[in-house]
Image (cartoon, rainbow, N blue to C red; front, side):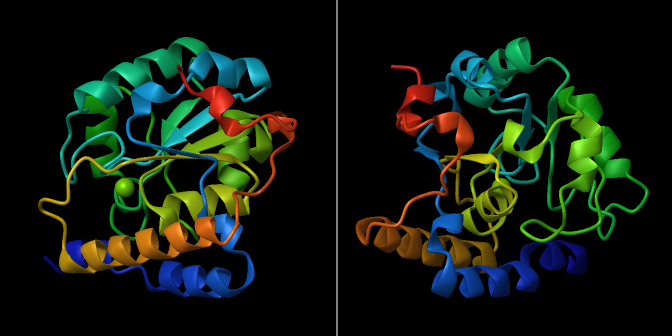
Length: 218
Ligand SMILES: [Mg+2]
């Protein structure tokens, strides 16, 4: 119970979010904000030069705490792997995080269940560096795509390191703790306002002036 509470209180992340909120609001804004992962055109992304895809787990590929992929996520992930091969991995703030999964047991169970490598790391998103990802994938951060449902964690992490960021709508709010539900509402309100104010996701070299919508299936 305590461990689960700890997974949901991300003070370092929250303070970074507010710090960014005053200075670099674009870091919280994804390049692609979509309702469903099936909209992503993985072939176009690979063709543009991207070489690795990193996925959050809860409410991105599965419902929270589940081990089974949601059907649309499973199909999109399969399409992604058909273009990116082995350069696809899961990067979670629970499984594989040393603080909550020191022996990597949860990570191993997930790998067996989802068939995707789970990266082991010691700092929660959006904190932490990118060196482990660079050595795992053998490519540079701007060649990576970060996919996750949370502006505060997944999107800020990816944008901080110069990745392309993709935010699918979460599957459900069911079973989510109050802390996460509140954080979500706050993030959604802030990011909607910043978009209206004219803020945008950071520029990315592979976008080459074209709209990020070029990476969506029509
Ligand atoms: Mg998530």
